[in-house]
Length: 94
Image 1 (tube, rainbow, N blue to C red):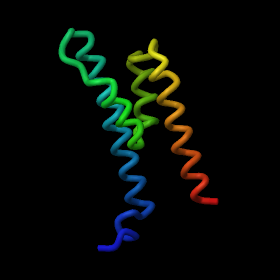
Image 2: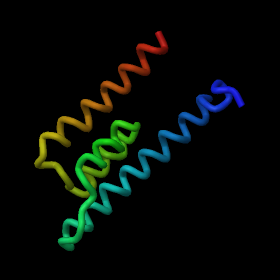
Image 3: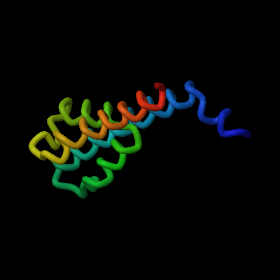
Protein backbone atom coordinates (compact mmCIF):
# COMPACT_ATOMS: atom_id res chain seq x y z
CA UNK A 1 0.00 0.00 0.00
CA UNK A 2 1.34 3.42 -0.95
CA UNK A 3 1.50 6.40 1.42
CA UNK A 4 -0.84 8.30 -0.87
CA UNK A 5 -3.44 5.61 -0.29
CA UNK A 6 -3.06 5.85 3.50
CA UNK A 7 -2.91 9.63 3.87
CA UNK A 8 -6.11 10.48 2.05
CA UNK A 9 -8.22 13.48 3.04
CA UNK A 10 -10.88 11.07 4.33
CA UNK A 11 -8.41 9.20 6.55
CA UNK A 12 -6.94 12.45 7.88
CA UNK A 13 -10.41 13.73 8.76
CA UNK A 14 -11.27 10.44 10.49
CA UNK A 15 -7.99 10.63 12.44
CA UNK A 16 -8.64 14.23 13.51
CA UNK A 17 -12.16 13.41 14.66
CA UNK A 18 -10.90 10.43 16.67
CA UNK A 19 -7.94 12.24 18.30
CA UNK A 20 -10.17 15.17 19.27
CA UNK A 21 -12.85 12.92 20.79
CA UNK A 22 -10.12 11.02 22.66
CA UNK A 23 -8.50 14.24 23.92
CA UNK A 24 -11.89 15.56 25.06
CA UNK A 25 -12.48 12.27 26.90
CA UNK A 26 -9.03 12.45 28.54
CA UNK A 27 -9.77 15.96 29.82
CA UNK A 28 -13.03 14.66 31.31
CA UNK A 29 -11.29 11.67 32.84
CA UNK A 30 -8.52 13.79 34.37
CA UNK A 31 -11.09 16.19 35.86
CA UNK A 32 -13.04 13.25 37.30
CA UNK A 33 -9.86 11.83 38.84
CA UNK A 34 -8.92 15.24 40.23
CA UNK A 35 -12.26 15.54 42.01
CA UNK A 36 -11.80 12.11 43.60
CA UNK A 37 -8.16 12.72 44.53
CA UNK A 38 -7.00 9.77 42.44
CA UNK A 39 -3.95 9.27 40.21
CA UNK A 40 -4.00 11.85 37.42
CA UNK A 41 -3.16 11.90 33.75
CA UNK A 42 0.24 13.62 33.37
CA UNK A 43 0.06 17.16 31.98
CA UNK A 44 2.63 16.25 29.33
CA UNK A 45 0.29 13.52 28.08
CA UNK A 46 -2.52 16.04 27.63
CA UNK A 47 -0.15 18.40 25.80
CA UNK A 48 1.06 15.55 23.59
CA UNK A 49 -2.52 14.70 22.62
CA UNK A 50 -3.01 18.31 21.53
CA UNK A 51 0.27 18.22 19.59
CA UNK A 52 -0.97 15.09 17.82
CA UNK A 53 -3.99 17.00 16.51
CA UNK A 54 -6.38 17.03 19.45
CA UNK A 55 -6.43 20.80 19.93
CA UNK A 56 -10.13 21.31 19.41
CA UNK A 57 -11.01 18.45 21.76
CA UNK A 58 -8.52 19.70 24.33
CA UNK A 59 -9.84 23.25 24.28
CA UNK A 60 -13.46 22.06 24.31
CA UNK A 61 -12.72 19.75 27.23
CA UNK A 62 -10.82 22.41 29.12
CA UNK A 63 -13.76 24.80 29.09
CA UNK A 64 -16.59 22.25 29.21
CA UNK A 65 -15.21 20.66 32.37
CA UNK A 66 -13.51 23.84 33.71
CA UNK A 67 -10.29 21.89 33.87
CA UNK A 68 -6.78 23.36 33.67
CA UNK A 69 -8.26 26.82 33.02
CA UNK A 70 -6.01 28.39 35.66
CA UNK A 71 -2.80 27.14 34.06
CA UNK A 72 -1.22 29.33 31.37
CA UNK A 73 0.47 26.27 29.89
CA UNK A 74 -2.98 25.07 28.86
CA UNK A 75 -4.94 28.30 28.39
CA UNK A 76 -2.25 29.69 26.09
CA UNK A 77 -0.60 26.44 24.98
CA UNK A 78 -3.61 24.57 23.61
CA UNK A 79 -4.78 27.42 21.33
CA UNK A 80 -1.19 28.25 20.32
CA UNK A 81 -0.55 24.66 19.25
CA UNK A 82 -3.85 24.55 17.36
CA UNK A 83 -3.11 27.82 15.56
CA UNK A 84 0.38 26.61 14.59
CA UNK A 85 -1.06 23.37 13.23
CA UNK A 86 -3.68 25.25 11.22
CA UNK A 87 -1.00 27.59 9.83
CA UNK A 88 1.15 24.61 8.81
CA UNK A 89 -1.80 23.07 6.97
CA UNK A 90 -2.65 26.36 5.23
CA UNK A 91 0.99 26.85 4.22
CA UNK A 92 1.02 23.36 2.68
CA UNK A 93 -2.09 24.16 0.65
CA UNK A 94 -0.73 27.37 -0.88
